[in-house]
Image 1 (cartoon, one colour):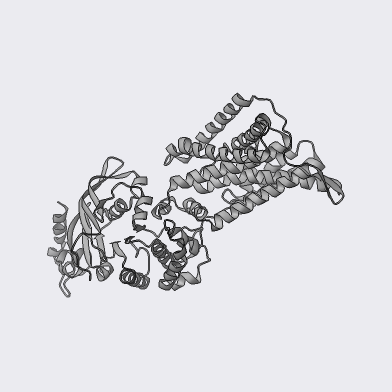
Image 2 (image 1 turned 180 degrees about the vertical axis):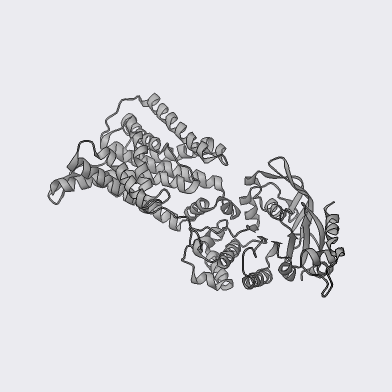
Length: 290
Length: 272
């Protein structure tokens, strides 16, 4: 029972962080139709930024978080303005290739500044032990779950009730029609990229707090694929549920089966689900009236 | 009917539109729309009607089209080649051909998107009720996903969404497209009512010349990128070419003869 609770909490934490990373991915795909292969690098940059502010500049963690988020927004806007906007109207495959290039570029810049060695991060989120039934878990994991849930709820509300959120969904549905409503598609794209970079930075900060920072954090980008494809590329609840499912499965398989199987189990699940539901669990099916 | 005097609300002077820098679509088109009028723009497929509307609304830009000559004046101010978002803010709203509703949004969210450029947020509720008054069927379905509405309801939603922007000039592109005749009547009656009750000026593009001429105050007929004929519906209806080619009428009881085949030549006269 104790192991089970440990594995569940670990799986939920990982799952929530995966869900956040997936959320950034889904945002960009939903609003701009671009599959962003640099999502993992956005997360990594977020982690390094929080490391820089807390460890290198010695700032309090509150200020650091605010600065990290602000910088993430700036990075998102810059990427949209100078990398993606010149490509509006180009074939989607070129845009995807560009995001792959962007990911190499970001990795290179990060290793230029911070080197390739993983760095330890003094935990800035309180990590005293918490009793959970028979098991004891650290508070930072519970905080990570809480923060992730909060972010996901905020985004669900944003897309449901806020004007710009509804406009973003409209752009995703039909760009030209959205333009005819007076929506500036360029502005919506900038919104999508900056929000996505911000969410990735939050995920990065949470990961950094638990495992420290290093270039391998970019690998989250790859781990996000089973999550988004499982949940549906364009679905926010799908990102959440997909994250939780993958996180839990990886954790249970790692704990009970072992032998490195947890590293591939996500992809096994992915294949199985796609055989049954090709749009993912919550993906938008194309509406066809008959 | 409002008198066409004074400065027109919208004036197109000899505009030329080129797509992709090579394809000349509009070749010196001129027309005027006065405040409070319904003006119909008729013509066959490929005449350039939709391009004309897009030139006005700024939607040419994303399609690599450009107004290369002439001017588009709105209230006397040139607006050609501006971004659509700026033109919507000036009070011109285009309802695109084929309805183009946001399929995955609910009816109500579609209407909210229509009000995107509005600054007076507190009046939006009231205007939504106004739209529901014109289209009671939308009210019944307001929480439904718009993609599952019927074609007629989608057209209603497209017009309702335009109303939410409170435009002064509404550009309607083929509102009758793909709808059953009864529904077409219903939609056109509502267009007329919107024009009279809200004072919205309307520029209407239609293939269905018959119904367009019933509600229009003035009409232009386009062919090959320019206007070939214009006048009030009464005048146009009497024109033998319009009767034959746009209204599908021939002299009743007249025998089909070789001479009628030659009408085809008369149509050619317009093209030169």
